[in-house]
Image 1 (tube, rainbow, N blue to C red):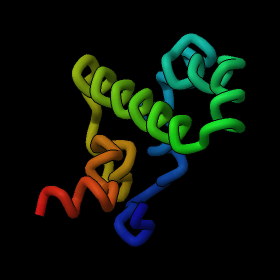
Image 2: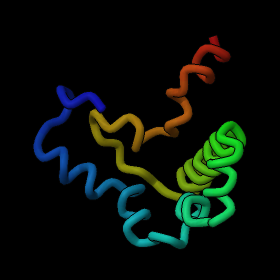
Image 3: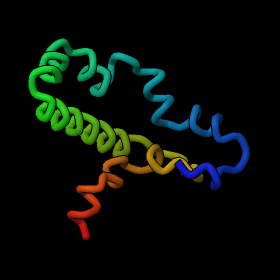
Image 4: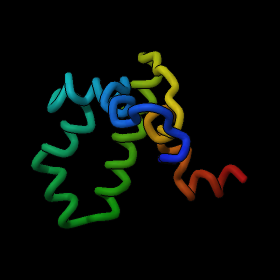
Length: 98
């Protein structure tokens, strides 16, 4: 986040962001939470951290892709990772697109 770009009450902007509202309404019943609370996830995380990271990234990537296809998001200054797909900012993705 770039705090210098915020005007007004940025905590309220974050709290009322569509993705944060979604997580508050659908705690436990969304793919990200289901991944985290799955007992198999903990086993994989302990045994094969690389597999865990790859699977976690796929779940998160798919969640954001689906969310933004279905939800209209009101742009807010300074909240880049909530207003856009966060994997756009991954270094490996950025470097591969150069």
